[in-house]
Length: 431
Image (cartoon, rainbow, N blue to C red; front, top):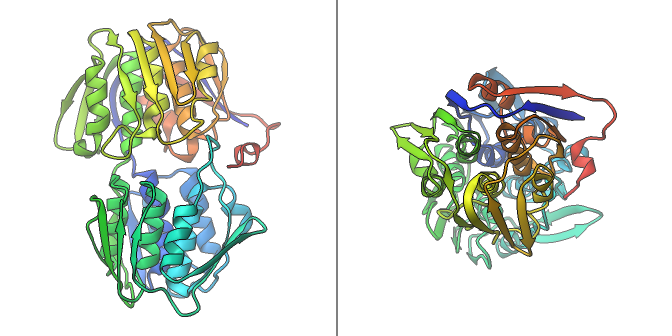
């Protein structure tokens, strides 16, 4: 078991540099299977999800060269396997992008159902709907997705019943090499959706409309390789901003795209955090007590569900009664019980959490139930008096590169400890 030990009550000051976007990287790496040539990908975050995906594609015949920290060269020319390695696939949610990539490249896919964080059901029915509309026959049996398109994939019009980031990206991957034109309607508009489209276009695809409700993919015969740099991680940046809001301090968050941060910045400013924007950085400073606020998670450009646990910690330190409505996932409030053990006052009813503040948090032993809930526990530990132990920290390392080093650089007292008597996090909470 990996755990973090945090001695809190210290403000954060200095600079933190944001890594490449996890949610973009975990789609771009499987999408590289479409490329019959060499592609160099830069600004890849060094996180456990990325390391797992690199192992997976390597076992499927992709040549992987690590050129330098953050830069990887992939050559999928000789990839032949249509079956992803089950043991690794079951450890990561984003492995479902392999289905779209294998269908697009080979017309066949055999991929175990993914694992990852457990905060409620995240069905892949919209993915399947898209694959079948493109001409594939699909079946889910023995814990695996089996998809076949013996006559190839053919362009079509697909309307997503719900705005789904995963389905938008997976269908886009599958349709890139399909014959004809594919139009996806009611698309997700997140920055990482746009980043995936930009990556594919850099390799020779013809995709337009990413970032809008409608994406058009004109199928091409082949992707030939090239170079691409992944965008900065919006959620990592927001997490450090929330840490300053909860614990206090003055931090410059560097290597970001400020426009991507608007949905997070606006709410933190409303709560009283001082925010100054520059070309590729943001300075956040806590100069006065936080105020209560209302947050409802929504698809981009709304407030992201992946920032919901972090801003809830901020609300425990705000004056008045705050309310959080979770509209994306049904059971993403499990972590609030851990915050209440630290002294927070949070009442959860269905998809709504009511937070009374401010409350002084006291350090204790808490558990990271998933990636973003784990980040929230770290923020709570930074804001609390005394020592907080965050168990299950391997979840956090799925999405935050060098988090211990980065937090120490801005004044946090945090250490990482390895214990030997706990099963792997992904087996403990399969999704």
